[in-house]
Image 1: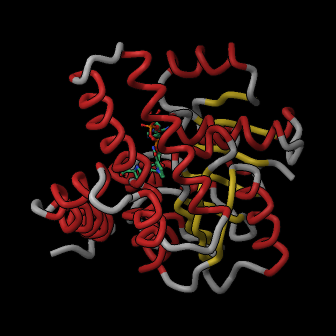
Image 2 (image 1 turned 180 degrees about the vertical axis):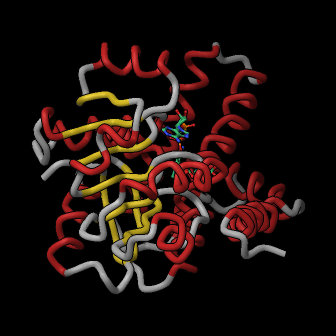
Length: 269
Ligand SMILES: NC(=O)C1=CN([C@@H]2O[C@H](COP(=O)(O)OP(=O)(O)OC[C@H]3O[C@@H](n4cnc5c(N)ncnc54)[C@H](O)[C@@H]3O)[C@@H](O)[C@H]2O)C=CC1
Ligand SMILES: O=C(O)[C@@H]1CCC=N1
């Protein structure tokens, strides 16, 4: 099977590396289509497949095409690809917001899988949701699921709303977590730790809390109770959080991301 990745940015490169690492594709069967000659030169030095600058030279040879450009670049990309598409090809889009119907219309093909991964895919700890158009066969779906699994965990969802919601939770989510970490690192620095110490304290705390939560059945609220001694420091911190709207604010940030995903797909107000 020949795979073409379109877009050699963060996510395009992540997929190229993951697929090669997992031996799901041979280097000679992996192509990357990029826009700028400078990017093509850099990618060639990375040796992660054949690099192309022209759709005509590579699209027809591909069985599976991964669309990894920004949503804002999709319309132009569809127009450039459309003359060379083939209805037998499967297209896997990771573009935020852009719907299956829009991709079908833009490319004139029916077999579309829409997925929403996240950046930890780079280190095999990604979270992806995916859904597919009716034209995608079971075998094709399993094949793509295997491919997504090389980047972490993947779940099939039934609706495109779930893909947009995934974008708002796990797609953009790493940024929310890092924002929280940034605030704690700043607090640690203000309390006298060196930047390196502050980062270690905070990163190891996040890792420990996440591992605890994932390896046990307790809810977040139950774990918070276990950290909180009666009349102690955690209670003081939690009481201070409760005086603010930080909990609701995090939820409203996620809702803003969902609204933006819908807007990018042309469904916003
Ligand atoms: N960065 C993230 O954490 C995540 C991104 N995504 C989605 O993945 C997609 C790509 O995101 P990133 O890799 O972060 O963006 P990026 O900006 O790093 O990479 C996109 C690349 O596509 C190239 N490009 C644009 N038009 C092109 C064309 N016509 N032909 C070939 N190349 C073209 C750009 O030059 C750029 O190098 C976006 O649609 C985004 O919504 C999804 C989940 C997570
Ligand atoms: O910010 C974005 O639009 C993309 C989608 C999810 C993460 N990055």
